[in-house]
Length: 78
Image 1 (spheres, rainbow, N blue to C red):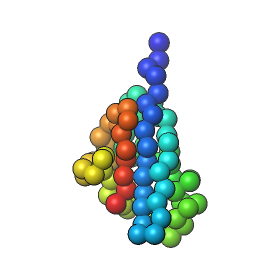
Image 2: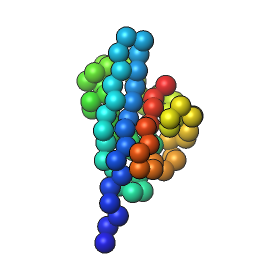
Image 3: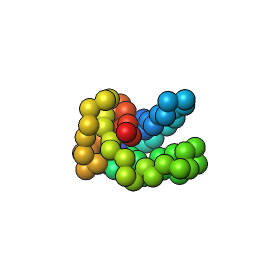
C-alpha cells in the first residue's frame, strides 16, 4: 500500500503581495520538490523572480532543499 500524500503549503511574499499555494506531494518528497511542484504558478505570478536561486525554509526556519517535507509544512521562499 502506497503512503498517503502529504499536504503542505508553498509560500512567497513581496512587500505588496503574497502567494500561498496548497500542494500535495509523495511522502518522500523534499523541499526542493515542493518548490518545483509550485513553480509554474509562482513563475506566472512573479515572472521576474528566479525561484531556483532563492533560499528556502519551513515556518520561518532556514532549511536545505534536500530536507524531507512533513505534513502541514509551510515551505517558504526567501
